[in-house]
View 1 (tube, rainbow, N blue to C red):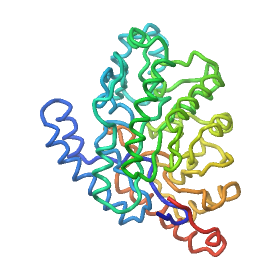
View 2 (tube, rainbow, N blue to C red):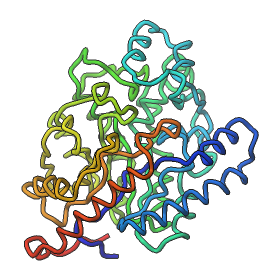
View 3 (spheres, rainbow, N blue to C red):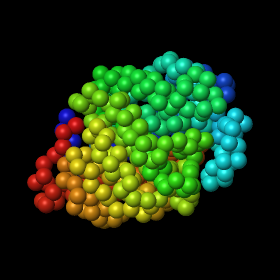
Length: 391
């Protein structure tokens, strides 16, 4: 399948309706069965698919509308895991002072973020997103993107030494099982014919921080024990182990600097330059990076990779104009050929279901502006000669 130049897609999450949030809460509380919850979720996903088609998105997602957040949902699918709030984790970690200091940097109550913790040997109860993607495929003929938590953030998030250490001796040992399970999922998605698989690895930005810098929820209590270079090498090895051999499907890695607060001062800042070596080492086709916020710095070039260029900020009410978006694309075109640029928001619009970064109306308006900018560029004789990209 052939995509137009500057294909437009989303990074993943979309704001949930009140009805869907209520259904999810009732489902988690045992007041609603899975059939009733999925009926509500199916309707929400159908509405989002039709909205993406109406807006003109080229690669569709399901908005992660069934999920609590982009990685905690694995507790429903994987045996050996338990969902804990950060407040509950405070009760079990040894370094309570350090963990409380970390929580104080958050712009969210500690009970509102749930983290999957490994408490036993990991085994796959059910596919992570294959069934959701199969439902999405039945709704549209357009190319699909399936989003998965990456192996590094899963390993880091799930490894809490005080409980995980009873089962896995190290993060490295846990990581081997995480890789195995994700490879099973990627293989199933490839078999379903999914055109784009995205692995989310936001914590990579934090790994590159200098020692002693303020940490964020993305690491929870899980301070890296290695120096940044060794930790990034470990992260790249996990990602590459997951994607090895799946060369016929477009696979990308998404990296941002946190997307849990509209207060940008609580989020990470800095260029991707310290990550350049790690990003270059990843055996993936595309890097999906935020650039609509000044916190990300100027675009950097990673040879041989496509760039999923973040051109709108999901955390602001201001709707970027097509002209502003074109300016961002023009800057990226100085580094990347037109056929290597995909367009997307910086991150999802609702990383955490109960804490959306924006209202659907604003999110939709931002996507419409991205599509308008893409269509304007496709009509430009300067770029149209570059041809198109293959799905």
